[in-house]
Image (cartoon, rainbow, N blue to C red; front, top):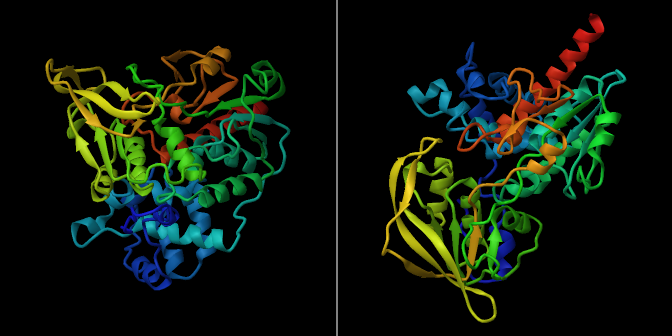
Amino acid sequence: MGKVQRISSTNLEANFQEVERALTDQEAIEESNRCLYCYDAPCIKACPTGIDIPAFIKKIASGNLLGSAKTIMSSNPVGASCARVCPTEELCEGACVLNNSTKPIMIGNLQRYSTDWAIKNQQTLFQPGPANGKRVAIIGGGPAGLSAARELARLGYAVTIFEAAGKAGGLNTFGIVSFRLPQRISYWEVEQVEKLNVTINTNTKVGRDVKVEELLESFDRIVLAVGMSNVPNLGIEGENLNGVYDAIEFVKATKSGLLSGEFIGKRAVVIGAGNTAIDGATCSVRLGAENVKILYRRTEEEMTAYDFEYEFAKQDGVEFRWLTAPIKIIGNEEGEVTGIECVRMKLGEPERDGRRRPIEIKGTEHVIPVDAVIKAIGQSRHQKLIEAFGLAHERGVVKINHETYQTSNPQIYACGDIVFGKGKGDAMVVTAAQQGKQTAYSIHQHFSVTENA
């Protein structure tokens, strides 16, 4: 891990450079030659997008980097991003047969090596299919939306993406910290989709800039892939003080260069213990914060962050306060955060998601002096948009046929975070990419059956 500089704002840019070093040419060749190229390889089965991992690694060993990149990206339209953010030790590398003897193949690093080569050499990997006269609108330009668009375009559909943000890429562009996933990687994946004649309308929010009725009338099919919205309120006093941040917007600001020296020498706390909370904490360290704490009302066992994210935060010096819940954010006369009042918790009976319910312990109130509070307690849902389309949902989670990805309106499909429920689940970038692909194939199958009937 690269050393984090905490001295001045001049070090901030260096702090946000990629932590993981890329493989050299020699290291990539040596590592690819370790692969056994298994028949019926377990690593393929462990990859949600089904990348032919032995094939792409063998192509590295033979010097065919274009073929290697195509093998990766044909299965995973956001394979360059996933090379950096996938929990590979739980997926492909965790299934590698070499775990039983030496150490697993560095599949993620080799995937990065191939896709980095394609990016550096400005490769266009795929071409659009012959036009079939069908039009599909995709709402949301994140991993699920981009993947659906890429596959549909290759199958000959005229695809238009409606993206509310100023740039497409969703989570990969704005929501994952730069020292894990630089924006240039996500931008390249977006460009690969655009080169298939996919139209991407940015700064375009459905329901505000374009009417729901217009989409229903103008397109043969609609794919809802908007992900999730902002972090909800904590519901405690002091949330409107200066120095209280939404974790999603906070990470976005670091990726957009909107935060400079505000955190140098400050004390920050992050509320929550998921991957976004880890991102908020490690970003705070890199922005120069003197002390960073994560407060979580449950224990280490119930936290939803990946193990490698947890270890990364600890290496960065982030403190964890388990069984601690905020009850009030304290400010001064100027409206700036000066502290956070908390209470100790204990765990009761399990809730619906299987985690034990936190219960407040009376008389344990205490104040932690802080200068900034970052809220990372999950994300709210796009319920207003879902209801504008008249779709069946459960508290903002769209109900779908899990084989076809069709919603209660057969003209509309949904994939990605908008169909994921509470808890860990499968809400990973790689799973969203796979759902986007499957949605595209489901649409194509419908029209193929209809035309052949």
